[in-house]
Length: 578
Image 1 (cartoon, rainbow, N blue to C red):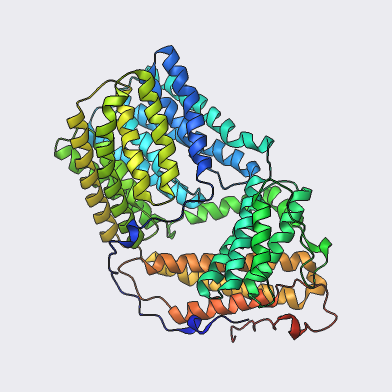
Image 2 (spheres, one colour):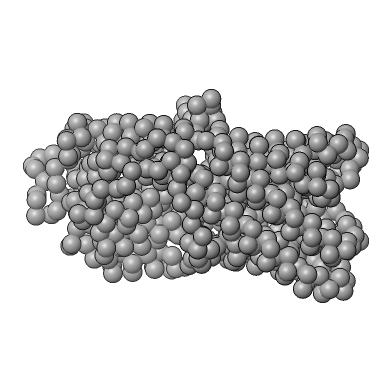
């Protein structure tokens, strides 16, 4: 089924430099449906070491335990089996970055060297987080910790004990984030499937290119979540059936689909009761569901080697991630040296400000620049108001930090600038654990570091081109065409490939279409590059989604032609003449 005529409307030619929005980046969004999970997790993970150090009278060590506690912000969208591995990797990465910073700080007091190391760590953390797609909060937390540690007084003999504190707090964070698996082990999968059902309902209610892409991305995310969830259970089998319904509805948007039924399933799936048991999707036998073969393939050494080789290629010489890493390196170094030249005592704030700006393209980086600057400037006002309360006693200081940790995660999904209003006073209050500082000095330094870091960071983003973004679009177009051809062949020869082969081909095609739209969106917001192949993008997306719609029924071996009354259409020709 084709989309509305708006799909075929011509798009303007890609400009070399886009206009910079002012109001749109500051608008508030709806809060995330799981905002409370990282908010409560980071408070619980921080409260244990904070209160322990308070009882021991060693709040001066909070910086090292906080490094481990902040790991609780990661991985909340992942199934628990993968979350456990991911969080362990985050804790080790945090510790490694902190170790490099502490050793450097103990060996030299040269500001030039410290800024250079801080910029190099920030660029490495940015590239690594983008390559593994760690998700929010990304590299900014790692950079915040390592940059602050670079400018903290340190002796080499203290480093092992400080790293042990980080690992201990990281273990607490790991337990806090993985512990809910004992209560509701399929919780992340249920939320991912509920989002897919809701996106499919929106697609049926309002057919169009925007809802089509949103539905495809949500279905792809749900399949990936189920694929990484571990061994199949009855609940996961039911969730797979629900994703098949969401996939069929999102692919075809047939008038016979009932969006209210999809939304009702989503509500029941998200709730704590039993998962709804949907009827078999049209033309599909219940035993055809499941992704066991693909899940098993990922467990063997060959699948792991393939994943590692893909990761290495994403960081190779031709990677589209390298220009963004170069922006991070140069922008952070420029911000740090500029603040040091002006005599600011804490250039790491400028480094962190610059590092936090870098998004997938220049336009998004500009949006983050506005958000970060506004949030930090408002945040120093909040800090000035709260500082007298925090100085009434050590317990008040601890409670203020925990409050702002919660508030930051509660607000940041509405808009980054709103979350920064809470992050800024929390970062400033951390300095109070090592001793009091003049309020005017802290506020003045933070304002200056914010402005200089934002200016230097965005300047680097504007001047360092990323022409590889357009090349990524070309590669995504080729990959989408190959995946579409494979899906059409699997559908035509499903008597030989079987339902598992068709399912894998469909999931691969969905993934390639999501990647194509992501690459196009990133390139569209990048400056100083050639125009995008808009017509080819439009044709590739329409042909790919038409193939998904044609094969959405997942019929068994062909014994008769698909009935046109059911809404099925013939697969798009492999040569793209759709």
